[in-house]
Image (cartoon, rainbow, N blue to C red; front, side, top):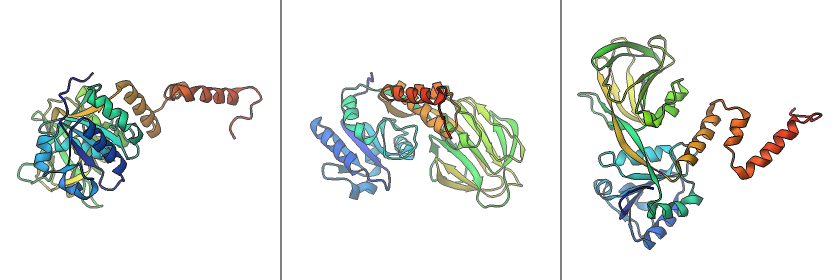
Length: 323
């Protein structure tokens, strides 16, 4: 059970293009019954119905007691960044594709809102990476997924020197370098061959993409470690992306520091066990190896019997099997 205070104002964070109107109507109707205010930002003014207050971004971040993110993982990450200075619970409603953060689908939203009103939920804490590049101005300074240093052009390679807690670790020469939180460890980091990191570990994974020389393996560091990356003289120009958004261009001599901010985001969980099972399914779709009996464990009980019966028929003597 969550011990969160009563939600007096809920903020809407919308995917920029996906049709989310029915979910908004569901939220507005539920808020009318509570009652609670429903807030939106000016960028979404033309997408929300009457009954939703449109307030400036600063007021939005300061007044909401909780957020409902309608979209995919990117929308949920953006919602957490909006309130990183005063984290509030974020409920993710999946209007996207494959995602790890969303808790419910649109059809489940009415029941989820009732659970929130009854404080029948838990909070999953998420760490963020806070980034500083000295005199280089950044469009954003924090990310819940990853910080990526990639080539600005198609030629050359990213060349960076790594220092941890003022000790030189070595250098990277690669197509890109991914610095990942546990939340982001299943994203670009995983695709690049990096480890899946448990959210409870508060560790940072650094993974080179297509390494050519220098450090060629992923490095896992602690939450308190101070990470500094310096652009070497032989590096190609670098684009710095934070959670998939271009934050700056870096060149020779520029230095970037990254520190972890624990418990910077709060994601609503209605059932930690169900979420863990869904995550296992999504990882198995990526390429996490599971045995057939382990895959059956992930199937809802009402469907499992049919799957087991079908598997038995395929394995029966004289069965034609699969072509």
